[in-house]
Structures are given as structure tokens and as C-alpha cells.
Length: 357
Image (cartoon, rainbow, N blue to C red; front, side, top):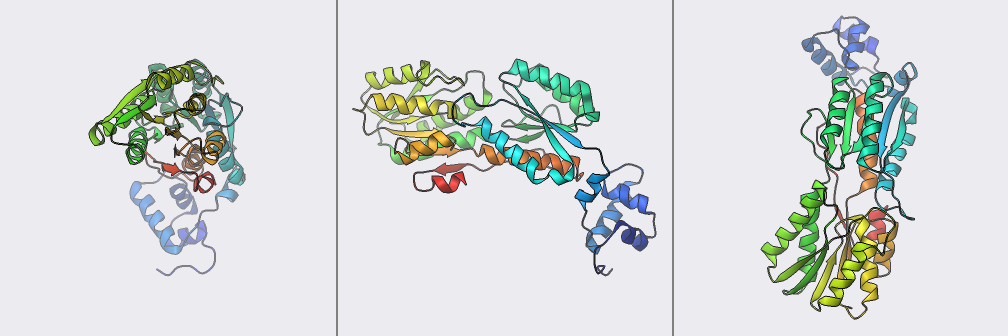
């Protein structure tokens, strides 16, 4: 078979195979009404002929697809984490607006608000929303039930920062919390003495992500530098409370122990509390800080040498990827993997601007 000269159309493919254009259309758009054998043959022929789908043209004839986005927003004066997810999603929506797909934003501050919003979306179903992009706070059974309702209605559900295997059919951009903890710990072993003490914030108590990250960090340190003592510091909060419980507990630990050589902020909401606690105790000049997530705040800390390094989970990229995956599912009828990993970066003073781009 020769590749057709010029732009290949559905009519060209139907003529080559001696079948109707309707059958070709159904195969290429993932619609029912033809056998799997014929569908495979049409798709293979289309590839051989160099057919390229014009999604923008096809979208003109189609009702606008809506993607519900159910996410928190940061409560701080600067972007910390969730705002970068929103920025990435909005960037994707702006770039692909010609495909007749748009987002419907729902802002949730907690799991109760999220549950109410997911129920509303599931109730309205695919006639209103083709899919949803969200997170999982604690894998609450009520939230998972709403995911199941949506999937049963042939809606697409994408969960950022979690890998949920049940119900089947969810698409995940996992947090890679084990790798994040190990990367932070490996870096810690490179910049600390053989003996000393590390202060580590505990994160949110009911978060499986924070729990996994903390456990992997501690296990790596114990296995590779057993002379280091790990001191856990409680007091996680998402609120704008830099001088709250975490700050006070960190100050108490800095007062109590003279052998502290490193502080590890397990989450992006812990960074400022650790920096300000160390600034108060200027006698501890040789204490390094490893932060989490490169943002407006940690970029300044690196530039000001208040932090040694930041483990970046790339929330902007996660948001951007999430929207593009929804386009692949809803507009291009493409099959996508259940799990789509995102990279982890180490940002230092001299490469932070590159990581932030």
C-alpha cells in the first residue's frame, strides 16, 4: 500500500478498504457498531496511509466537553503547591481551547467539601461532565464511592498525588512518596557528618502520602547512616501560621539539642516554619535545611542561602499533564496508562531557576 499524497481523509481510507466512511469514522473515533477485527484493520490502514486526525475540526461539530476540577487552593500569601496544580491545568486548557474542551473549577478546602462537590458532579453525570481531576485526601470510602459512581457512568476520573487501585479504571499521577523520601534521605547522607541529629517534620497524621514519605526517609537514614538520630517534629498545618505548633516544636528541639546537623521539611507547608525557627537560633549556624517543592517561597530561601536544597515534585507539570490526559481520553478517544509518573527534581541554589522554568 502506498502512502497517499497530500492530506489523507476518512473517504480515502474507506475507498482503500472498500467499506463505508461511516465504518471508518466509528473505528477512528472509538465508537461502537463495528467488530474489533474491522476496527483494528481500519486503524492499521489509517496509520499506513499517514492519516492524521483533525481534532480541532471535529470538535466544532461536537458539544463542549467539560472537565470538573476539584482541588484545594493554597491559603498562604505565596503559591506553595496546589496553586501550581491549578496553573498547570489552566495552561493546558488555554493551549487546547481549540478542541472545544473546558474546565469547571470546584475549590475544596477539606474532604467534606470535596465529597459534596464530587456527589454533585456524579449526580449530573456525563451529560454535564466528561471527567474529573481531583486528589485524594485520605482515601475515604465515601469519596471512593463517588469515583465508582462516575466510572459506572463512563466518566473519566484522574487522581493527582495518589495511586488508588480500587475502584478499577482510575487514572493516577502518583506522588512517588517513597522515592521522594529516599531522594531526600540520600541527599541528607551526603551533607551530614556520621553522627548528629536530624529534625524531620511529620506531615499530616492521616495522610498515607506523608506517612510513606516519612517512613522511607527514616528507613534510608537508619540503613545508610545509623549514627544519625532522627527527631520527629509535629505540628502540620495548611493555614498561614508560620509561628504555630511546628515552629514552636522546632524551636524547642533546637534549644534542647546541640548536635542537630540537618532539618528536613517533609511537606511544602513546613518549609517556612523550619527556616524561621533556625533563624531564631543563630547559634546553630551549621544546620542545613532540605525543603519540599520549589515555589516562590523556597526559591527565595535557596537564593538567600536559608535552604541547602529542595526536593521538587513538579506540581505545575502534574496539573498540565492531567489536563492533557483528559484531552487524550475525551477528545482523542485514546487509551492511556492507569499510572502516569511525574519526575522528581533536586533544586539547589545554582540550578533552581532552571527547575522553576
